[in-house]
Amino acid sequence: MGKHILITGLPGVGKTTLIRKVLAGLPSTLPAAGFFTGELREGGQRVGFEIETLDGRKGVLSHVRFQSPHRVGRYGVDLGGFEKLVLPLLHAGAAGLYVVDEIGKMECFSSPFIQTVTALLDSGPPVFGSVALKGGGFIERVKARRDVTLVELTVKTRDDLAGQLVLELRKRLGL
Image (cartoon, rainbow, N blue to C red):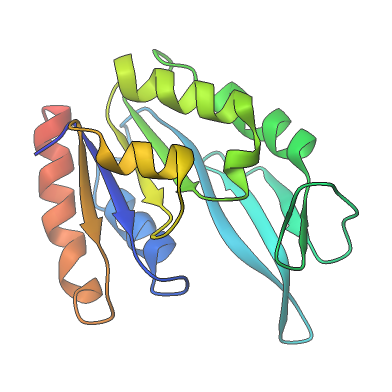
């Protein structure tokens, strides 16, 4: 098993929900830093994605109304806002566990994000998070790393994985 654990799976299968459940099973005194992603909805329709830091700050990663040269489908990506909110959280040495939800197409538009996550994976404490099921470039390289344990989440496995992942992270963290 690699030092880092990344969840992958189809969009909407519950990767972020699983990550939140696992973190809830770890000691609240554990120094952790990082972020979650989530859907933004208006009138029952998905209109974008938000970022929420572990310390409760929020920002919008992408939105259908954003005019940006960086687009995934119908969503314009706010790289500047993303980098300002997320990058300061991900410097090795500041935490005992880093949560990176997610390493996906939108996040990978940011070269500083790629550099920071690479540095974390190379020398920092364990990284727990999610990575896109599909994608080349950085996404593919992260999934191929020997120090990454990749866990594919499916509808059938999502209810059983939280307890197993809590135990695995406790081992990695020496808890």
